[in-house]
Image (cartoon, rainbow, N blue to C red; front, side, top):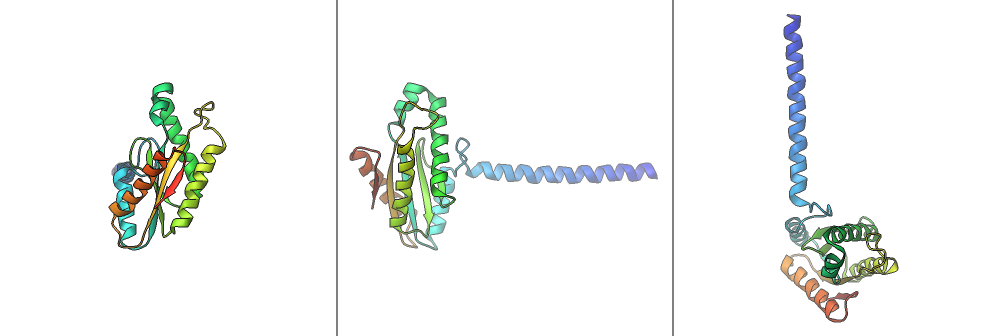
Length: 187
């Protein structure tokens, strides 16, 4: 009898542990499904969904940033250095934002920052803060090379579609690139 209770007790513990591990694995898979593995920011699909959801309820500003001449970084210093540059840039972006906003990676070296319920003027200030931080000191990953970024910023009222907000920010980014890079432009 005592042996049977022991077996049942061990079986119950094993079942609880298995259930805990299944929940942990499900949580990890859910997280990985919406996050970029290199930078740990939202991936393209997730940030688009977040922006679209916010816009159904509130105004929002969007910053689109692109690292200037990033191909040169990869070509001259290698892809591992390029990855380190991207990761350090995101660390600086997070610091400059101070916990505000949702960051997503939409392409290799292109990122979006959703500023939920933030007016255009404030969003431009956030973009300038990030740009100033990058210009203030070189990244540790490339101490002898200044990494810069160009920024496009836009704003949209509630019920605006994602494409409208993103396309305006992307057009402003394109304008920043055309005017010499390392700039903040807005629409």
